[in-house]
Amino acid sequence: MTDKPHTGPTVAEIQEIIRERYFESDNDRGTGGTFLYFMEEVGELATALANNNKRRSEPTQAERDNLVEEFADVIAWLCTLANINGVDLSEALTKYTDSSRVEGVKD
Image 1: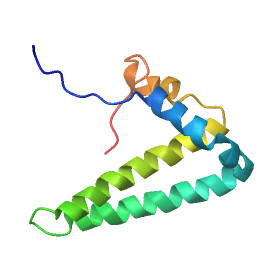
Image 2 (image 1 turned 90 degrees about the vertical axis):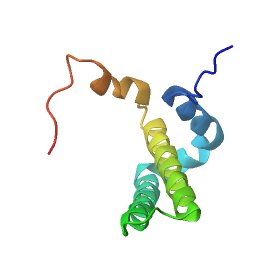
Image 3 (image 1 turned 45 degrees about the vertical axis):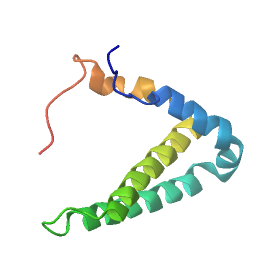
Image 4 (image 1 turned 120 degrees about the vertical axis):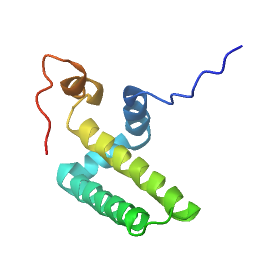
């Protein structure tokens, strides 16, 4: 038997989990309030990235764990924003998976 790498949940599965758990309260909060929470998490991710890259030595395990957690939080809040605004993130990501739509590279 060969070992298959763990691929984790799909974007659609993550978005659905977030919808099932949080949609009612997220929708009540609305886009404006939810966007503020999303930006707070982006700020926390920026801090974690800075902490992981501020020196030449490897980050501590605690710093690395925090970085992983902050990426997860940003993804969860992005799913929330998509959910309350009726956006299917899997569909949105075809912008990057459909070769006829992918254009250029940002410098």
